[in-house]
Amino acid sequence: MDPALITAIAVDDEPRALEVLRLHADKVPYLRLERSFRRPLEALEYLRRHPVDLIFLDINMPELSGLDFRALIGPVPLIVFTTAYSEYAVAGFEQQALDYLVKPIRFERFLRAAMRAQEQLAKGTTPASPVDPLPQRQIFVKSGSKHYRLSVAEIRYVSKDGNYVFFHTADQRIMSRLTVSQLLALLPEAWFVQIHKSYIVSLLHVDVVENDQVIVAGQALPLTKTHRGELVRRLEGGG
Image (tube, rainbow, N blue to C red; front, top):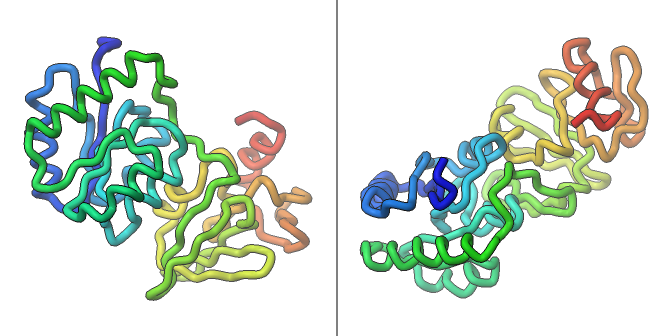
């Protein structure tokens, strides 16, 4: 791959907005738009295994806001926020966005953002790497009409019951409607592991691993043979 080539993805719940970004990106020879996503959780899952240099990120999305998305992924990659609402600009730059594009996005303005990314990367900005959020980070969980801010370090385990999942902390049990794949995309992979079709545990809170169960903060949870090896390997530092 050309070291001067900027790899990017776009995340926006509006198909037309994604198409505009694609058309603009096609005109910039040193920018390659790898993928476009309408669902931010799918983008998070993609970023785990496909590092990029730059994300064009909408702020106002129903599943997960761009500001929350930014808080999840850490300092890399570079972020260019996009939105129709200029009042988000201050909040965007507070989260160290490289640039901010107001819709409808003109090509000249898009090009200026791409040039800023090129300049920033040329200065020796930390190269893109797979997303690996630290446990100090926070996530937002939608439960009914409310959104709860949870510290990743406080989540002991997550259980699944039907179409719902439950986030368990020391003093809370928060219900949300998520699939297992969406849940795994939301949680930092380095700190959480699945132990059963209905349970995902935080490695920070595992006390004891037995043949068929795991003790997490004093709570016994079922452990299947198919997941035991991976759990032990992760606890022993095998990555």
